[in-house]
Length: 177
Image (cartoon, rainbow, N blue to C red):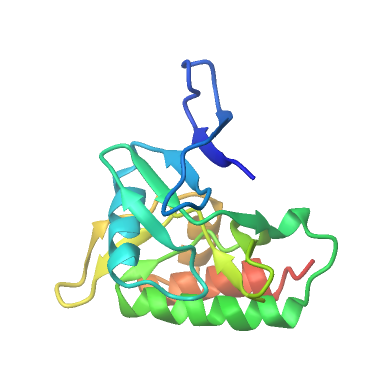
């Protein structure tokens, strides 16, 4: 298995590209996402300081990249236990909200299964549509993009925790595939 390097802008500026590399982190292949998204970089820094078993392990955060644990996305899995996904993602949701992180982009495309066959864990990844809300000062320090899930939830709620919870319900619980 190889390390995957993903660039949204493309390695050569021609659109999204994924290349393979022999580079490893502590002897293990990993996933590197090239990004200029300040929200995503800061969220990954926080998750690196506060890891959780249902969120990919963040290995390194650079000025324009994040190195993280590789997982197999749920949409590639032939079958999986939906209840286990719900249970694991509920844990991830609670952990992130405890640290001021509001994911918003809850969908099965952003959940993967660990590649370690000894571990039966679902993990959340891809933090580019998320935000950080500073509850003590009641403001976004990193506001999430107002994409579909955010717009839909904010039609009913204004408080970040409720927006995130609504997006979770619609993306994970209600839309179980």
